[in-house]
Amino acid sequence: MRLTLTISVLIVLLISSVLNAENQQSPKLDRQLSTEGFITISWDDLDYSSPLEIQLAMDPSFNQLVRRIKLLNQNSVHLSGFSDGLYYVRLIEDNARIIGEVSTFTVKHRQFTDAIKLFVLGALLFVFLLATLYRYSAKA
Image 1: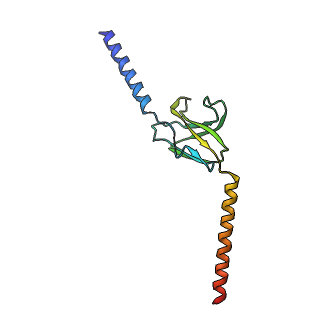
Image 2: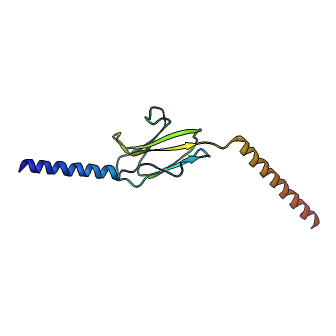
Image 3: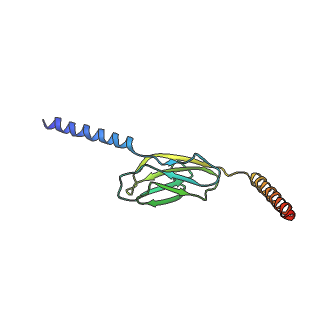
């Protein structure tokens, strides 16, 4: 009888741990490629009263941490100021237990020549607007 009860308890604990592992939320990213250097990281509401920590690293083993951010009662965060590269993100409980899977995103800024092209286009449109305003205001 005791052996059956012990086995039943172990089976229930095993099933609940498997179900909890499946329900853990990985950080969700608003995009996989950022060309502007900012990203939004979100996760489903978790039932944790202790603070969570987001860790961002340049390597999958998280030896080169870029940022560590402690959060309480939040389910998203907006981050900016990233240089080009591949970043790894994970969500950690207060007791250092990893929640869900590691997510990744890449930052690849636009080329400087693209910025110059957009600047020149904007300058041309501005000059055209000024010329149009001057032409029609002179007739009035």
